[in-house]
Image (tube, rainbow over all chains, first blue to last red):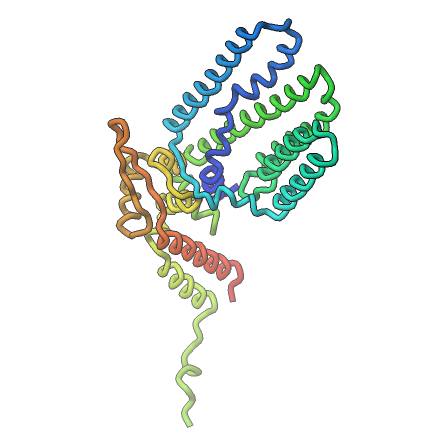
Length: 209
Length: 123
């Protein structure tokens, strides 16, 4: 991979590579497997757990945002650039199929399927946007494709295991794994670019010619 | 009847003609964009709306002093715009590429492609 491509990748996807900031959410999703086996708790304890969860999510998000900004700085990407992949023919087609499926499930099928179809199709589209984006590094596209395959092949078998807790934990594991992978990729890319400043800068010219 | 002068003069070797055109092509390159550090800065800024000083420093691997000098040089050439804002007793410096900067960067890569093609397929 050329340094110009690395520079473009890390600039365009700087925000996408920081999903680690939401880590408490997938971590909690994984913990549902344990929580499922725990005895029922009173309403006040449940409310307290919810408050702790909300505070930990907000606190971790704030702390990690500040830490990343101090270490790596910040970038503003235009709305046009951010929504570039939304205009991909396959993504547009999938949105149309999703809308048609939701209308059909909403009116003619059992209403319980509505949220299942909505959540699964949204996850599929969001993951495909990353996989199809040619400005992403090949390793990131492969990692996300593996995550998508695991989720959609193992997922249907886990739907009824532990009252849905197993599929929740699987989704959390995939989410957390991809977040960690993205953050490590961000660190590695920055490390590679800035390891030898003059050479790294010169490569921009040398490799392109 | 005298022959035209061009026939009498010895033809320069093909490599020399190619060398001359290569030198001409290289001479037309924008020196402000061609400098590796400035090219790296422009590449980053062309991929986003704006980036702050810390991001430019981390992504290009330049030192604070060098980055500051190169940013000033690019601003003087009207390729980028630098904004400074005070926030909690700190000055936040952000830079964004201008339309002229985008044009010059595209033009630069086009010239580089031409040079690569002319060296890869000599006539």
